Image (cartoon, rainbow, N blue to C red):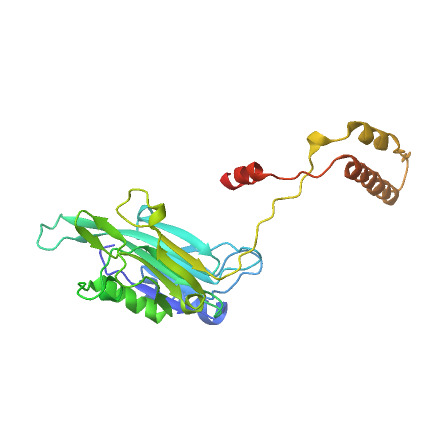
Length: 301
């Protein structure tokens, strides 16, 4: 777009007629490049929300998950090239819009542009039970993690301001080198934790013993939280079936004559028939015991 890029954020309090219907028809709103909504109205018949701005904006509404409806929605101006953006759904309460744009290079001819990326995070935080772990190669410098004498990057200051605003604390120990190349070294691989997680942090260290020839150092972290343990599905070991026993049990089944029988009688006979087969399988087919190789293959798939 040649005009200024404008983003409007609004919590519509799940109201269609009193809020969204008028808000999304307001010409001053429809000028926006992106409209980020929290707590949009929920359509009880379809998994969507109110969309009166079809002519000007494309709706991005996360699908429900585990019976939880989306509490965020984005409206992207159709004047923005669809090939320049992508949409990622993290959860029904969290979506990310990635927009690729160009910025004119300073002191250059009008045709010189540099590609840039903009990430818009639309989040609805409904309770204090949510926690965040932010980590990665930030590639910014600041004394808070680089130690005294480290130059201060403007982006590093902004990063600290954002984290502080959301109650997220720096975990990386000051001065721990995470990148080395020749005689140069720096601390640029950072970790931040929500306060609730920070208090449960057991270990945060540079894991040199698992270094594999990168110019960055691996970082290990341990947090005292309980995650659900996945249990492999219970399945039968059909290869170990006692065919003789199964045949004997099935041969005892008496098939009733259901000619001209009532529908209810047929249904009862069907239930009894399948129950007998299930009982025969229970007695003749053992349950499988998954070994390590089975678990490994399952995780890889």
